Image 1: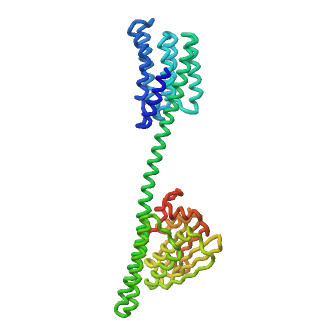
Image 2: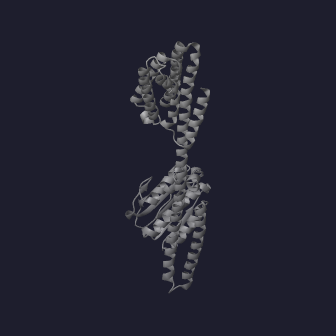
Image 3: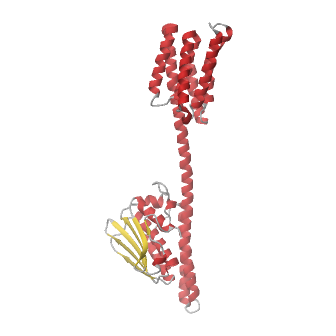
Length: 402
């Protein structure tokens, strides 16, 4: 008996590693009833017909219960419980009527019970079944029947433990595959959104400067050459940023974004005014606020029709605020607070909220104003910028779009 349970454990463990177990993994244990079948056909049973009907009933109930026990939905329905109770009654009746090898139906009943009953009710069910098996076996075979009680209890507990472990392994594998899939998707989105954001801003600057160079080419060659030099510089910077985006090491800079925004605004005929006061923010907060400046300046160049744009950065050591205000067509552009508004500003609002900050944008004083505020030492901003998806908000959801 010990040998049988040892190999049952190995077989179930192997089934759990290779594929999801099912009722077929418990069918071979019906061979324990071969002695009873031999008694029926050999004429050793007192009533072969009744014994044969009992054997058929037991096997049918065993197959029904075990096959329904590997799916939680069917395992917990009343019909499975009723079949298990009927199986218990048939087992007791056959064991009391015939004894001997018929007592081996109790370990089979333990296998079915272990498959159908899981924690937290398993301990009580296993103990009750072991006591029942022991009482019936002792009444038939004396104290030697205690081995049947132990075999019944151990078959119940081992089967339930192995199947529960198999379920846990399958759930962990499914979770691991899901995490791997999400990691691939997030990295793909990170790359595509980073590339989109970088090219959207850079191409806007190049287009504006190219238009300025074309206008100046006939009347001010030096100024046109200066614009062409800027185009070359912007292109080289874009190549560097794209390489950094590909490798995932791009770290934004508020100062660099402000300088780039001022250059783009001047090329578009918009007078930039930059004001900074207070201590500099932490690098993580600075990187995230740099995206705000980039998005807001690009929108000014593309949509505002403004003649003047003011970029201000203020801080008091605890919080830092960036404001981008223009004097253009503010009433033609929607207000954004938190998660509403344009796609790019909405994404920035989500990222700022993750880092403990806020973003508002909308028409104000005849123009359009974007205001972002963050804790000066926003630690969560590092995750939002450098490690997409690690804080539960994929980076792709936060990148501005143009």
